[in-house]
Amino acid sequence: MDLLWMIIGMLLLLLGIAGSLLPVVPGPPLCYLALLLQQLKVVSPFSTGFLMLWGVLVVLVSVLDYAVPVYGTKKFGGSRYGVWGCMIGFLAAFWLGPWGMVTGPFIGAFLGEVIAHRDSSRAFRAAIGSFTGFLFGTLLKLVTCIVMGYYLVLSLW
Image (tube, rainbow, N blue to C red):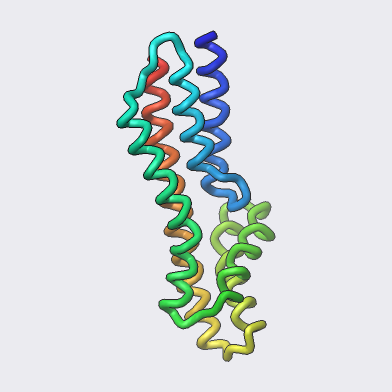
């Protein structure tokens, strides 16, 4: 039965790492679930305090994932249109590979601000803020998932 929990845990980990890049899939919660599943093994690899700490971190990272792009956009003078444009731009351009993942959010935020009836210089500035916040949130999720993956892999030995 331990082998089953390890396999499911690794699959959830991989899905969680992918989810840290995809805004639709909740990456950190899936990686946390992978850690929790390891507790079902005959010998539980993690302490309760360790799991509680990671639970708090996952909630914090999930909240920051939504708050950071909004903060970046507001800090650079943008609106909600820029934030939504950033997310839609990412989804639309994700399939174009790494360049799409970099340019899509920026172009989406810029177009969102133009739609909000901003002049192009203010829209450009707000797009930079939204894009920066989006990248920071994505990096935060990715690092969180990779660190949880590290602990998951250690628990398998």
